[in-house]
Length: 231
Image 1 (cartoon, rainbow, N blue to C red):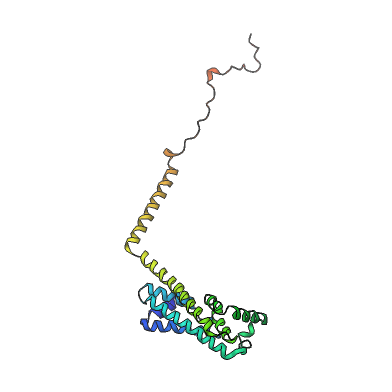
Image 2: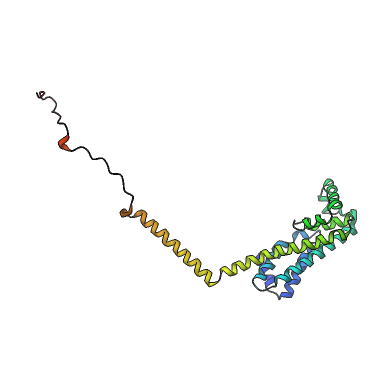
């Protein structure tokens, strides 16, 4: 999927790529389709294309942050409009009543902080803005957290793709390739010398000398069997 996204975003002009990025992030705010949008892959791919020079990283971060802030606002508005009907929706019915109660309590106590934390958790970043609107939390309480979390999230995910692509690009330079080749050749030479040293009898470890038997002249003569004893 990463290769497909890279082909799509890299095969169109930069303005169109920014528009596709914004559309993908806005779609994630939809309760029905948001879970099927691989935003992490989209952001990493956009960052990698920025590292390759096709896109501009500050623009990628600005577009992404603006899109998710707008997505939070849309989700909040939808939740505000739906109100209690959100719990009886198709996805809302998959959540237990106890979980809904705890979520509403968390939203009233923490509000914006919950939105900020949810930005880094898939699915929750889609549901929490809707929940904030449905529970009646004023938008002014969550707006600063939404903006701060959006900028941080965009910098982390797009920056990760940018650094990965930039590192791969630097490793592919002739100087780096030459250095890696020299290191690899040196390792092969050392390994060959060690193998030759183990198999060469001239450098084999010395064995302890066996104790020679006593000289024949010092052996006590034993008379043959049956001969008379000597006086």
